[in-house]
Image 1 (cartoon, helix red, strand yellow):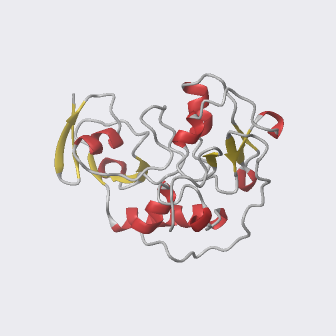
Image 2 (cartoon, rainbow, N blue to C red):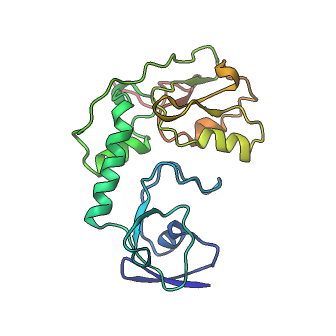
Length: 215
């Protein structure tokens, strides 16, 4: 077992735990977008940044950093909040703000975090993505304009389903989640990717527009 301090709380966790695991055990919430307990740690979204005193105050991802004896962690300093807001601004730079007609509205991690951190302006400006929406599949609709590159769809398809239908295509600003040769989705259509998508990039077509009802 390992003893550490998170936000002045003493925590004892197994030696193979991460900072995120330790914070959760202590009842301390750290925001996440790419992390899922079913999947291997990824550390891609950077929403879970925390400050570790022993690392000269560096901001590091909590979901991929293992705990060490005597570690002192801060999760809500002004620098951390500023960094998380910056992450959200960068995600929203290309992400379409079409929440009223997005099927994930009300159950969207990005929307919830944007509200929580009060990101109502953006210091950056750029054109939105214009990827072609995949309407060809009768079961799963793919809108990569809404994708935040958390990699959950590819990871669950690789690690749990063992099919490998998704992969990262291109690099940098042109990167996106795609399929083999960037063609239509061709898989077992189990829906695992839809269940872990934190935004509205992957939605169930038979269920689309059926979760909410307005009189």
